[in-house]
Structures are given as structure tokens and as C-alpha cells.
Amino acid sequence: MRQQLNGIHHITALAADAQRNAEFYTSILGMRLIKKTVNFDAPDVYHLYYGDNRGTPGTLLTFFPFPRAARGERGAGEASSISFLLPTKGLDYWIHHLSSNNVQFDVSDADSQRVRIALRDPDGLKIQLEFENSNESIDPWVGSLIPTEYAIRRFSGLTLSVHDLKPTVGFLTTIMRFSRVDADDNSQRFDTQSDHPVLITVHEDPSNGHARMGTGSVHHIAWRITDTDLQEEWRAAIKNSGTRVTDIVDRRYFKSIYFHEPGGTLFEIATDGPGFLIDESPESLGRELMLPSWLESSRTRIETRLPPLELPNHAETTRIQSLS
Image (tube, one colour):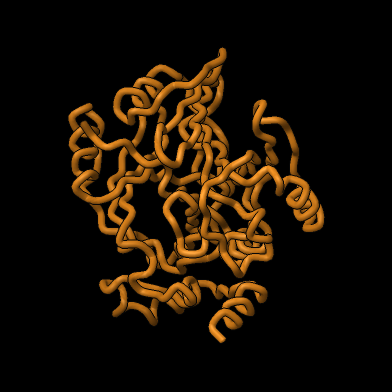
């Protein structure tokens, strides 16, 4: 029997302006820019990775910034929102922090155990901060403006928007081996049944138009697996189900396979290793543009075409202090 997927590895979305993106996620959400590289399939575009102090799988939100791209249109066939887990004791702090930085948000009860802050990033990506009592060990970014005791822990959930529940529900239970936990008229919810559980809500709206990919859109959801041997088992199972799946692709910091769930959202299964410390030290993560060996010969051309990107002052200052 295949090993269960261990929650989310990373989520990748699209942005417009790289500098604005970096300032929001480091200064407002308190995430660390742990890798500044390029889209290996389109090296004139940054690939920015944000996460905890060392880029632990499950904390990683990544972006492709396309300066001239149009704003995405919400609809069926996409992940319409993503959620992070935070400690309950940080709720008042985050309300004050977001208000002080002129970030619009709404507060609501997610359920009997969680309070939720809903907001959007500068490109319109819907983000939910879910506050609940949690004793999970974390590795928070010491350079963050957010106190470590209130820091984002990891991903806690996402919502898939579909025209028809049945195909996606069947795929999540039969192929992905997620467990259904509850349902209502238009939605069903699933648990990844992993050490780092994620709640997946599948919402049906037959009248909804198809999503159009653009800035503020989620590009794909990557699920977490330990190594390539287990990844091969998953690839075989997905292929045997009749779903088209790629060969294993080398993404330098992890290995990946890609496929679409029946509702249209692009899924990935990514390995934990080799990780983000293969080309930078823990102290210097995210400071320099890192390129894979096959792109190093084109570094000058790539750097010329990429827009300038500077770390916020507080991030750079803290890094210098940590090295002294």
C-alpha cells in the first residue's frame, strides 16, 4: 500500500510585481524569503519561495511574478483560497498588525475551535489565517517583524472550486486517499490524514465560469512525499487510474510529478529533499539569485532581464546581526 501523502509541500501562485510581493510576504505576513531563483521553464521570470526559517515543506508559498500579466479571474477549476495555521494567542496581535498596515480583512468563526481572518494579498490571492490551539513544533524566521510566538505555523487548508463535485470527490478519496470529514449542499471537506493535516474544501457551483489564470491565481498545489521511491509508487497509481501524469522532474530543491485532478486544478507531488540548503547556508538563504547548473552559463543575460529585487531593510539588518 502506498505511503500516505504528508500534507502540503508547497503552493505556487502568480504575482505581478516581485518587489511588492516580497514586501507583503516578509513584512506583513512575516514569512522568510528563503530562495530567490527563476522559473526553470521560463528563466526570465523569478521564482520566489517564502516559508519558515529553513524552508520546511508544508510552510512554503512560492510565486512566479509576471509584471505584464493580467489579473486572474476566479472560477471553477482552481484553488480559490489557501489557509495558514496560527496560534490562538496571536489573534489580537494580528488584528492590530494588519490594521496598522492598512490591510483590509474580515474576522469570522471558522468552526467551534477556530477563528479566521480572511484577507487578500496585493494581487488578490485569497488568504485565510486560521487561529487554533496548537502545540506543533515550529522553526520561525528570527528576522521577522512578527514575534515568533505569533508566527505562521504551516498550511492548514485550501478550497477547490469545481463545476461538479462527483469527479473531484472520487479522485480525492480513491486516488489521493484523503478522508471525507463532512459535507453540506454545495461543499465537501476532506482531511489528508497525515502528520501535518490539511483540510481540503471542495465547493461546487455549476453556474460558475471557468477560472482564468493570472496574477492572484494559484498555479498549483504540491503534496508532500518523502523520497523518489515513494513518488514512483504514486506516479504508477495515478497513471493506472487513467490520469495523465508527467515523468519525475528535477526542480533542484525537490523532485516533482504533475497531474490535474478532474475538476481542473493542477496537482504536484514533491519530495522533501534535497532541500534549500544545498546551495546556500542557513544564514544566507534568499539573499542571492541562485541558478541551477544548466542555467549558470546564461546568468548575465538572466540577471539583465529580471527586475531589481531588494530585501526589506528589517530582513537584511537582522541577517547581518545574526552573522556578527
